[in-house]
Length: 233
Image 1 (cartoon, rainbow, N blue to C red):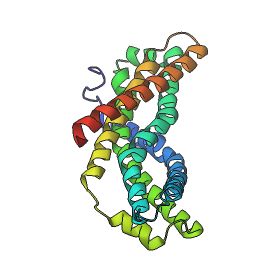
Image 2: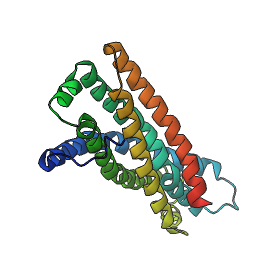
Image 3: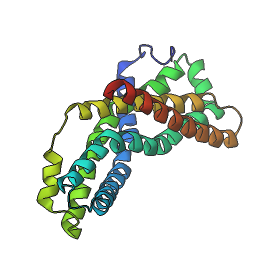
């Protein structure tokens, strides 16, 4: 980390690297985040509606449950677990391949800080794009619940919308964005570490990618517990 967080030698090259990583890490992940969020929002609404069948349970609680579940947990933690598999494995494989093909050694011979050049743009790109993906996931998850309510009639539309507005706590959004920033740093740094210290052949690249995903998921779950304890209790 000490070698990663140093001042870039050439600002123009660094900015271009960050923009490239934003496209690769953030933009290319929009489709998977969108699909998963819409369907999970729809399934969550269906499951809550099916179980909230008692006449004394207000129907607006279905929309409330879908909203808070998407904001508090799904659009941050679960989405990050998915991104750990997609983005983390890609980062570890990319850097690991550069290591075993001696591209990183070539950068160091030319006097380039390889850790700063390769890893810092990925961390910054993730810190910029992951919170935006969270906002997108929240919106699409709630939209998925709205669509399934309209198509199936499991809950009246006005009850669902009423639940979305009921006792909204703005800090929940701040909480999930804080978590997403921490998780984005964990995923990119852990994956970069395992890729950067890959030695051997092509088989070791696959092993490094697997380790990066596993350790990223474990740390995301651990810090999810820690941040929830610190921020919500």
